[in-house]
Image (tube, rainbow, N blue to C red; front, side, top):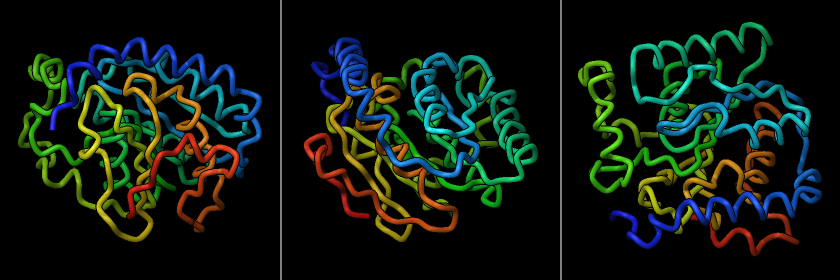
Length: 251
């Protein structure tokens, strides 16, 4: 079901509020779990660039991780340069560090992250998606669909892309889908994993455009990537901040 017009037109204002709340809670965010400093690759959403994920990357870097943007400019969808460039970037980070890479993808970036992990599971530690509609059955349900369609002339031949029904199939690495019922761009129902091992869904209060700098989202990402390699447990909200997590859809 397409998000309501009220949620959509309020996205910008709510994204600014998300950022303000994160600034106010930054001392608490710095107390998040810390991991082993492995590489993290962050992929932006449709029409966004690395600048859109700067706050997230700065935060994760402050926790000791080796955090990278994708360095592919604006996300114009599945162009040949982006599809080839993402794979090369993942291979580069894995090769230079000798370690598996955690992938964090926002919206369309999350769909890309899942398919990267599907094609290169040996290089990928886990995938975390932020409001990524990988389960979307009708493209018209996304309020970003018109922008995506306008860019279609730049995309690779549709026959070279995985069929839509494959996008929601489980990927071979642990994955956390972060979603919000207040998402004004994509239907939240399309952003959740199907039940199964090493798959989970975590709900937050966030706009779609604010997910990359929402305090609860940042905490979940930090908590997930802090897990030792080869060990994965479902997310548990911190006792003092349970109010930031409205529910966890079983997976």
